[in-house]
Image 1 (spheres, rainbow, N blue to C red):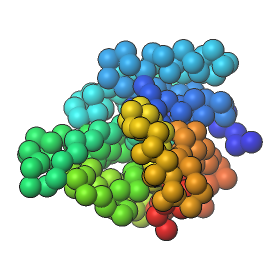
Image 2: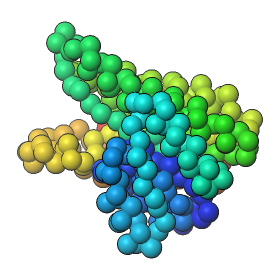
Image 3: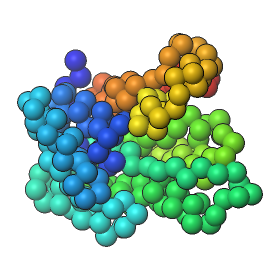
Image 4: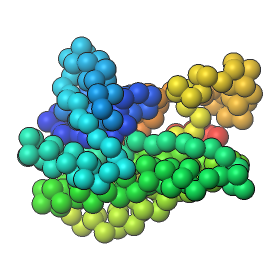
Length: 246
């Protein structure tokens, strides 16, 4: 079992779905989790972690506001003295064919999915460089690797996370900091549960492993990359997609 005891982890978008699963899995491995989301949205995540005997705290953040993100990071450092793990998970989708896409839908997706990661990583690198250690993991998507019609903004943001992470990985490797990406495929979240069972079955036929993924599948990959066992892995994309894209 991966041991993250005494590690301080920040997870953005921790209120539900993949973000909640990541926060719970990190806490189950011993990390103290700062579950960050808008308003009080991460309160339920914290309650679930504490009910399971884990350690967590709620943090309010608007990832599109650089001051809010910087306050999140500086607050965690002030309280705990360090940051060991940063998980950039917050993300949105505003799907539309490119010819019909409105500029605000492009801007909002890029601001939330990509620019927010830039802000968080830049802020987190300061304490990580000082302590000469750290794990940075960003949640991309199979869409960022393969593309998908009607999701040009989402695909651009998720592909951007991959290029961004590889570049930063090269910049900070000498300081003991690893930077990696997890790219989920089709995962059972609030969005996919609204889709008909027939549609889900049809999609599952396109996945070699024959099933839609779960948030816990993604969380397990993030937990591995956050651990000491992954200390020699950086600048990589770990695809969690059941073989959907190879």
